[in-house]
Length: 175
Image 1 (tube, rainbow, N blue to C red):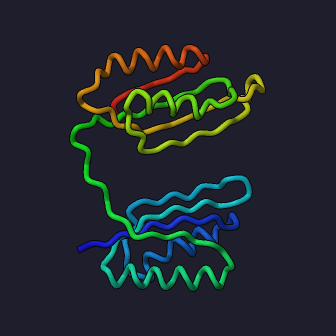
Image 2: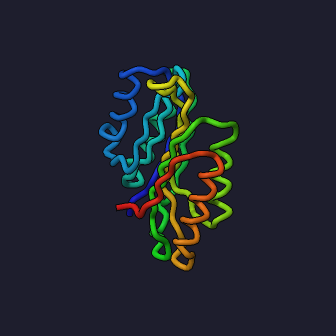
């Protein structure tokens, strides 16, 4: 039986830290099920989901404790389980781009949750347009739409919502 461990930490942004955390799976004989390394400001955000036998996961937990003490960092870890597939939902990819506006991420997420979508992944950022210098907003999301929902209604309401904020958006089934 497989056991699962999720970890989360912020460390100094360096290739050595990426190597160190990537190597943990090899040293403990675990598999990396999901891996997210992202530079945020001057820090490196690391989120990893490992799977392995109970003794491999126990070894991983011991190594994480040692790593915390040696590098003076905080690592959050928690044993978890893999969620069951949601057979009653259709996965959709949502991409949005437009001029940055206050509270935009919240407004988008709130609208989609009010539409009964199940949000699985969100990534957003603000960048300066190389053409005009205006601050632009971009968001990528994976969401599940329940089968008993009207996709055309959700799509139309979503388009109207984005038009209110002058956002260009695409909502399409995940392939």
